[in-house]
Length: 183
Image (cartoon, rainbow, N blue to C red; front, side):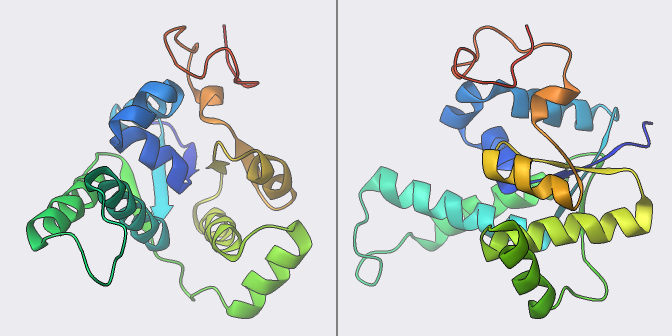
């Protein structure tokens, strides 16, 4: 197994599980398959899993036309179905959920978001990747977010998912517009 540890942002995991995003960003899907096959070790943090559940819930609400959350909500069955998707992510081989210990302080998050001009959630995820690097070494933060690719580099190695695949498939819907594509 490769000693390369890849810390995945929420957008990579959402690309893997949401069908329309999977077609648009095939590099994320291909990267997850590389992780499943043991070519890399995938990591994320609990906060990202919560963010994914929230995104899935919002996606489902939009699909069924829920506009006023207090009046209309998803059924318990639908929520359980979404939770099972997140649980299935946890069961992917060579993919682990990292729990920073000691927990990352608000002060560190604030300092990081101020220095990098990013959102607090992004600062938390980057700091989690940095904490993991201190424990296991050789960690790269994987995201498609242009701002995080550029600004996160100040704290940790960052890369687009296409960096870890042989070549980008031409049937990827974002192939023509992606500045990170590999021919």
